[in-house]
Image: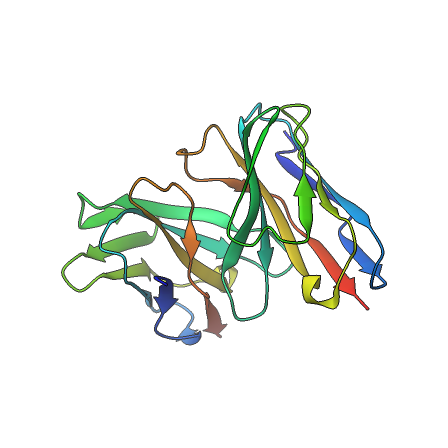
Amino acid sequence: GESVGLHLPTLSVQEGDNSIINCAYSNSASDYFIWYKQESGKGPQFIIDIRSNMDKRQGQRVTVLLNKTVKHLSLQIAATQPGDSAVYFCAETPGSNYQLIWGAGTKLIIKP
Amino acid sequence: NAGVTQTPKFQVLKTGQSMTLQCAQDMNHEYMSWYRQDPGMGLRLIHYSVGAGITDQGEVPNGYNVSRSTTEDFPLRLLSAAPSQTSVYFCASSWDRRDQPQHFGDGTRLSIL
């Protein structure tokens, strides 16, 4: 079946550097993508989303890039802080089915 | 504003026992859902509800029952717990099925011995 996957299960970044978390998807019918952050012992928390009619969307310190040609999604976090340590999930909704399909997650580790 | 509240936070069961995981939201959301999260995997949808009195199956419904008698509450029942149901369970809500993002509770960590 089709699924959302992540290139790296763990990403270690120096504090203050930019982080880039990648996500591959296989369903070309997906028209909505979303990133969640999950801190230890907590539920997923919304970060940013993007629709398929856009290539880029920016939030506060975060940017999501969508490349529909290669079915790739990325989350960029500027000036990574210790509070950014978490597992990051991408998810998609394929077409008319509004149910989210989740990737396995990437753990972001911040080095002091 | 409490958001989505799940109880209990932790639970240990023996195989064959039954249990109800509670979920309540105070945002007047119509759409509520239950997910399970297993190590190294993304969240998988168990059951969902688009409003009071309406429920439907998600990706992994076997072994679980739900009901939605009120807008606020969406309990998840395990009728006969199995070790394969050891997982972290998350409840989420949003205005409707198409509405994103969903608001998540902090989860129930369930172990079946």
